[in-house]
Figure 1: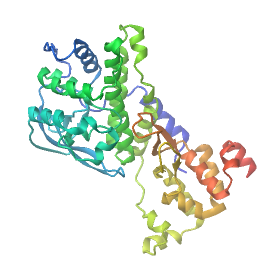
Figure 2: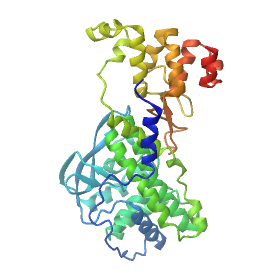
Figure 3: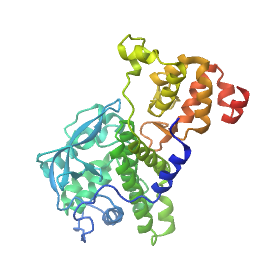
Figure 4: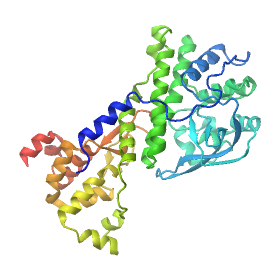
Length: 405
């Protein structure tokens, strides 16, 4: 195997001190005087200022246009998503979720007032976030950016930053009526609003990193992960002088896997790419020159190649909550077919392989917590299949398994 533990640990340490990779909008640090509004509570303006100081992307001075940014379909294949955003430097844009994206294409100017009316009048307020990607409401340019949380608090903050409290009020009322805010603690509205807005911003960004990785876009994933780590650091510094109970109310624990995800994407970017191989055709038994050439290789060589590709194995869930299943992936399927000859290499991988797969585990799709799945865990799952002994394999350490085998 050409992936050693030491190679993985160095970028992991470097990731903990990473700076923002994505550029800041031109007016990010320009002074801002909020425009008074009777419709929007003062604590919303106060929370917005904290988030912009921490790195929430500032749309001021940018051109509001039609753009294409990284997007995904239901199988996480990488494609472009059409939306409307605030463009700067012709290459980057601030989207409605408060994040900076590298744009794929810049189109015509968009009408901000009309867009806000579409958002406010659409039926997205009554829809579950999970279902939004399967629908095409009039405000799809906005709702398609939602993943695990409503981006409404962030969108309101962007409009306030643009000194358009009139437009912010158009989103405030329907969102309040339909309960699209996480800030439900009326007894402590300031803390509740800041908590909900922070979770919407950082939660959307964190899930975005996992989706970019699953779509095999490590460049954008690494850039966003570095930026989110910087946002978290700035937020922590910005809150130092706030009451302790306010600081304690803001949960950022879901960001814990981010340094490891960043390090793994950086590793993938450094390493040379593998030769493409249609593993699904091989697993399905299709006879092609490529499949025949692969099967003609010595067994030890085939197994080594498959284990090297385990970092690209994809898990699937049959329901929520429920376990991840890897047996449907052609890499895992082919290793199982190799039988006992693959046991020792898999034991070695379960003990020594420090790489991450692109798969993350979650309780339900609308939960922002994500658990990265390491190659070592997948190797153990495949061992269970080969040895038909989930009790022995699943209940033993790699060292004990090696002795037992």
